[in-house]
Length: 279
Length: 238
Image (cartoon, rainbow over all chains, first blue to last red; front, side):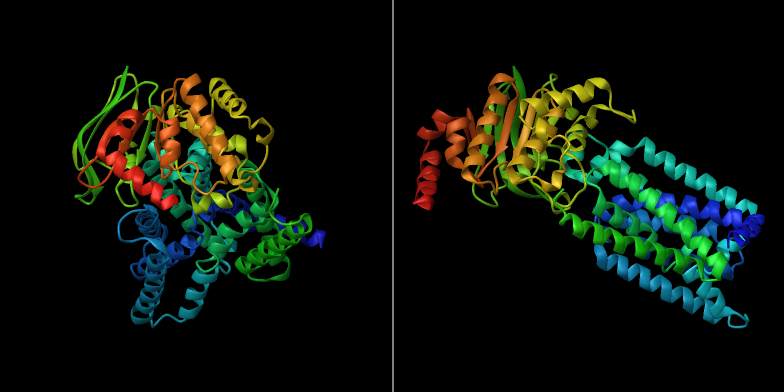
């Protein structure tokens, strides 16, 4: 098995997949903790479906998807996470996500019915399929740049993000620009989701965002501990998932999510053995 | 020294006033209790003072001695905080954030401030504990320490004893009084507990629709409105 792995590592596409996988998993985990704690667990799902809609439109006009998906997703994220206005809450997320999913599929069917592999295309957008194994160098560079921005923002504004997540009204009342930081969070959430679509596809993004945070929250009592362990868990699961999928030919996205689920179950068992959540 | 002056202020939601014609003057070291019945606009007034919403009418003037980011605030606990993974130290330190500007990390001085308040509020042994595992009274002390980190002069408390048992309540009131007297921090407290308000506060603001009262505790006891409200509160307790 090791020899087989060594052989695969000689290929660029394997290295690229691992680099992108690790970066995306790291970013998703960092943001995931905040999103889960702010009760926005489903935002990943909603935004990724918006991105799916945008991607189908991009396919129709034959433009590179990221130029359309990124702005559309950022806009939706800002609208949904802004915390005011009428577009708020889980119903709004559900409505937006399901309509863009439906409209996207509808558009593809109407205008691309001649295409031989329509269901294949859709399936690969939704489940990530093999696109991570067909990355070009430019994709990797773009991903690395975006990931670096996300990580930088997160580290630089770590204390502010903590304050805004823990108690937004306190932060606002004592003079912290919480709406600015919420906006920032919305934008980097959108970036992370567009990035993750390559890796696990639109349907499984929630897993990347939610699982590491939930695992870490079972094990650690400090915010810093939770953030760091979520990042570690997420990166490990992504690595294991990608390697298994390369070795055994399983779908990448689903394999990563399966690894996340397995770690989560282990964390639940450890937590139960420790005697609940009182720590 | 004068700290805060409200002149004919109306507060409310979407242009509809809940409480109107509020006037008061607060000096450094005062201890003001805002009392009134449910829905009278106590919380709305407090949020307006904290700049969380704009007043509908009138003027709110803070003296030059205090900047907008020098007000400490003890809000009511939210659902999010009940299972939030954070240590007491992380929570208290986050109170120092309002003077950080763009600096990404806390300075030594800020950490010292947090240490000092933790020691002052007698929660040093909780410092490394998880916030979500603390009792209600301990959590309030932690949030009070955080609020004090955010200020040197004025602290605003939103029903700080809600849901606490009588012994813990008395402890917390005593603590707030010590902070007011010994550290010279001005206190504005929204409260349902008129008994405690009369015992600890120096000034009372009663918010009740069209007729409000502002004055010292002694003046309040003598006033018509005060007698009426105290009588009613007495009946409720009987």
